[in-house]
Image (cartoon, rainbow, N blue to C red):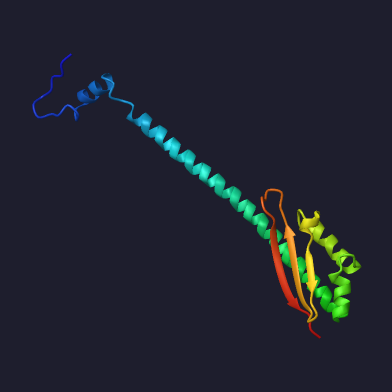
Length: 157
């Protein structure tokens, strides 16, 4: 079959030329474009899912950090409400067997995940000048490493 065209008409611009290209196997460009766009869309969706999962993890971490901060502030407030002498502070909160410390520890264990083990117990130290250092640890189920919060305060008269 020969294409008979009028002089001055280019085969690519004529309707006869486009039919000829279709019949001769010069199609498939739109299929490659569709596959490429599907690949790019899939990569974009995977990136969005990764971003969403990391945002959820960071949101949970921020919640636990807030809980730890409130727990440390609550312990400092308990220290301010009672006898503020060095001996009293150390006996009530510096000793892990003291009833005030145990009550606070029960609150910590109920609000922060992973604090049930001995290595994750909070540390409260009180020196002779009534400088208080509180270190809280927690580890969420999805976390690889534990987190910690350190709070320092001075209990004065």
